[in-house]
Length: 413
Image (spheres, rainbow, N blue to C red):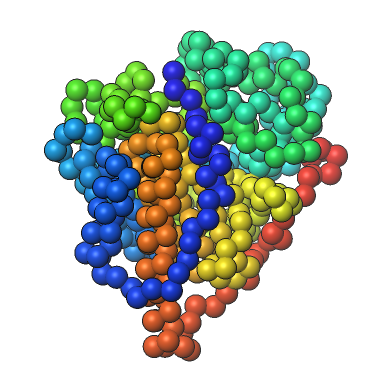
């Protein structure tokens, strides 16, 4: 089986280089995208600029599969890897808004029928620690014992997640909870299963019903995109540069869904990320659920740790080019055959994303360059607009929630 790459974790803190440049038109951006893909030998490369007003500009170059002449298109689907985590956190937030879950209830209450005694340290934790990588759970980011065990589980995805939760939550934490940042796919799998227990529906069904359908994300799904023996979507590529058929080896096992198996087109991924741009300023209606500004502010609130400012599926470093408190939201994802990254500035209402159908250093560098290209172009356009109409310059948005998470008192009791 394939594993979540450590590369995706390290790249969370890659610096996008902001410069002062003249704004380019879309044709110039497209040419530069092709130049980047060719120079770094990435089969297909894409990028998008997302605005809070709903505008999503998409750019794609290259071929769906190395060695073929079938061009990638702007409607193609891309594997998002660990960028799924922000969707899992948003799903939990929607269930909190609907009354199915609460942020501060301990795991002992959220998973009452685990089937094995829950370790006392885990029993006192809440969803907050799970979604901030502060639960002390195993990382499950490489070929470790827990990930191998996960690949051998049988039954439905819900049954497999239940068995995995029973296995890891009955053991002693490998790291003391709340004491350190430990990037953990297991934490998001547990959070996804808590949503399943609370609603009686699978994580996949919940994500479709509460996010994909209300946001009209028609291309969104799970696992590697496309069908075997039919080049209808881009293929991921292994470390040797060889294309990989979607099934059975195109992705991690499905039970890892809450940690990173979603695929989507650039535009549909942008629709989801736009929630984070809209919700920073006002309440947002997502289907039948009202996502309150205070809830989005919570999702934009990092754990109080200057070295690892992370929570709810995003790292939250400071960047000078961002407005307001200069806090940006960023994450990357890779299953070792695809790579993607997003950068959002909620205070300005814009973000950029980049995708590649390969992984490794060249794909990371390509996506970083695309992110910088799109960011610098947007900054140049913003500067020109503000010089032309200084009175209409975008104001900084006052945060509706403190910008630091502190551990719940008494373990959330």
